[in-house]
Amino acid sequence: MEYRLDDAYFESLGTPEVKKGCVNVFVSINKEIDSFIFRFKIRGQVIVPCDRCLDDMVQPVSSDEQITVKFGEEYSDEGEDLVVIPELEGVIDLSWIMYEFIALAIPMKHVHEDGECDAKMVDKLNEHFLVSDGEKTDPRWDALKAAFDNN
Image (cartoon, rainbow, N blue to C red):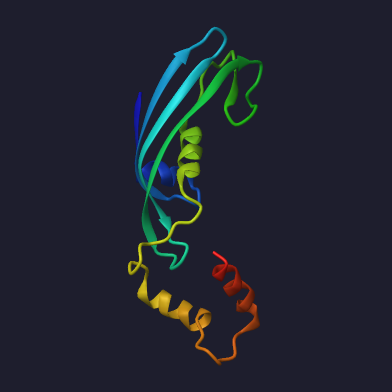
């Protein structure tokens, strides 16, 4: 099965992390003796806020994941890769599972390439973050600056 997840999909979920995107998800299902193995191949891009300037930016996502689905008496998310669905229903909704895999494929740090951030925001940050030698600094920012200097 192939799914094309677009802006309408992301907006319908109403999550703050990803509001737009274009992602293709290929799902294959293998039947085992007592379970089904769902394999997800995820390729595309999402729109997320830049950590530095807060403007939207395009973030490529790519992931290969799998879950095991078993039948049981009631729905249960028994771990990272096992889902139990009620045998009487026999239906699984993949929409949230696909979103979780996409969200996990987004790097922890997402910033524009150098020079692509909103110039006004960068100037404003520089006013508060960068100081010349000999100038008095705001002590609230000193600890944060020291943390960045250690990276």
